[in-house]
Image 1 (cartoon, protein in one colour):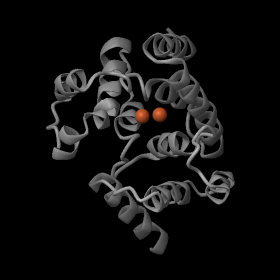
Image 2 (cartoon, helix red, strand yellow):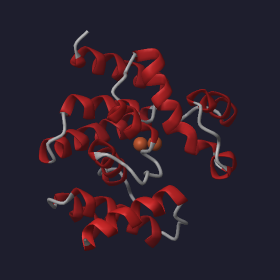
Image 3 (cartoon, protein in one colour):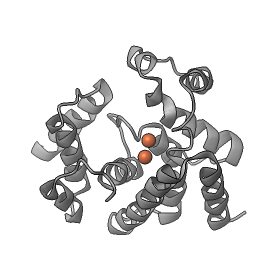
Image 4 (cartoon, protein in one colour):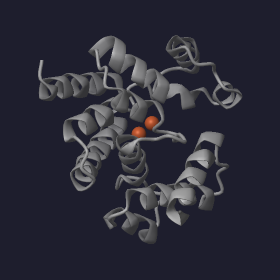
Length: 189
Ligand SMILES: [Fe+2]
Ligand SMILES: [Fe+2]
């Protein structure tokens, strides 16, 4: 199966698994992901796989997320136990690898970490993080923040998304803080 066929299968599965508004969100994320992949020299097929796969488990029950996530061998953090919805990235990555035999670690990592980020987020991971945050259906984005995605610096886009989380009065989770520190260090180096 070539990668276009694989993307088709994952898109069909997403449409079965998710409510129509969520499918519309994922479709907008996929469009923005491809745009960013072209601009930042990332394989667009990998981007489409990650985008169509990122929210596959977003509508699962807390119980199902908690019992499935442990299959990746990582412990459940106290934050994940308190907010099991945070596990949908980890479970999405498991679905991609188990059901669709996706083995590209960049794709799996991007899906795994799309909600909170990660200190060692790769380029595709940053692209998906940014696309998920800035897709045009996000009602919480101000005009100034939206303009950031027209820029040419992917790290600045990630930092702007994290800044926006803070502006909205939300507490930054530890992996997000670590990602921010890592990127700020690079900017000032
Ligand atoms: Fe998500
Ligand atoms: Fe999403």
